Length: 97
Length: 301
Image (cartoon, rainbow over all chains, first blue to last red; front, side):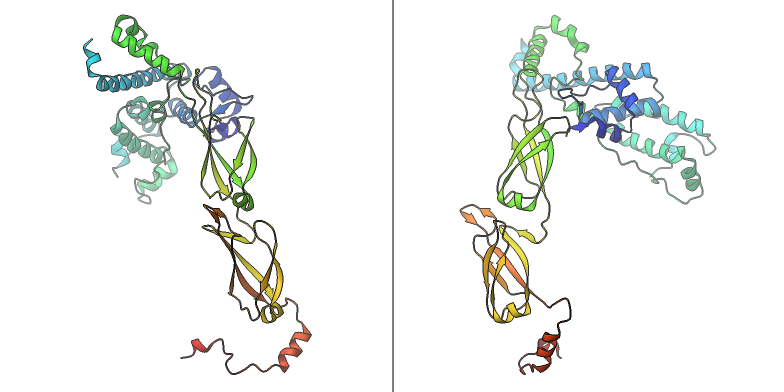
């Protein structure tokens, strides 16, 4: 589902300025194919994670960037590992090379 | 449900600061987004979050302490965690970061090959499907129409509504979804249809139902009256002596279906004048119904 900037602000409970900073920091990367930015459900869940990191877990702004960068790497690694496992299962011989 | 003090590992006299400290310590360890592959952390985190919700709110905490509410007091209805989205992210997601294993690619030919193939896949990956919702008028849903959808991200989308579309049906518009992150095909736009109710038509399968008010005179003597159908008004003959709840069937005036159309079913409703009518009163007072006319006969015991 595509979420408009206005709806995103409302559903994520953010104000304009905060969202602007988060986007500038690249904590959130909306797809910007259109004049107005478009957000996804994944962006909404990510905004919720950022909010929890800052408010509930006491991570400061510098820390949030570090956590997100590491998390993105973890997820990319997990996805790569998942594909590797599938690839090895489908072509067992290629793992002998 | 466990005791919230026990869940957070604090005693009952803990201050607000200690409650928050205990929660943060556990949350850092258990937050599902910090434990992407660990299902158990989610249920433990839920317990911790519920306990914290209760104990961090001084009013709720007091009510719990005095036994007014139980420990489940406020379970947070939780949507999906970010990790669920990240796990199913298509290659080419803006948050993807492969720098964590870029060095592998140079040292191992098997991995290098695999990563090269993945990069290739990402380049030709299809764009994601976008979901929209469109509300159409009853008659447009029956007869078909062409609608223009204004997209939340800007731009418009022309949607051809085929005749006889149903509530909740989804139209797939090929290639109208998000563009590919690389050079692949665009995704599709999926448009879910909601249908507004009509003032007097209702739809049951392929048939259109309509309650048609008729006058006392039309019901008794019969008449030719104009009746709306989804395709426009037609002249219908009301047979002599039609009663309330009599049903007339207009063949082929319903919703299109394979090999034809459904029917329109007209249910008659005899309606008396809303204002007192002295002529009708006079007439009725002179009229003596026959002995056979007793609509409540079945009710007598």
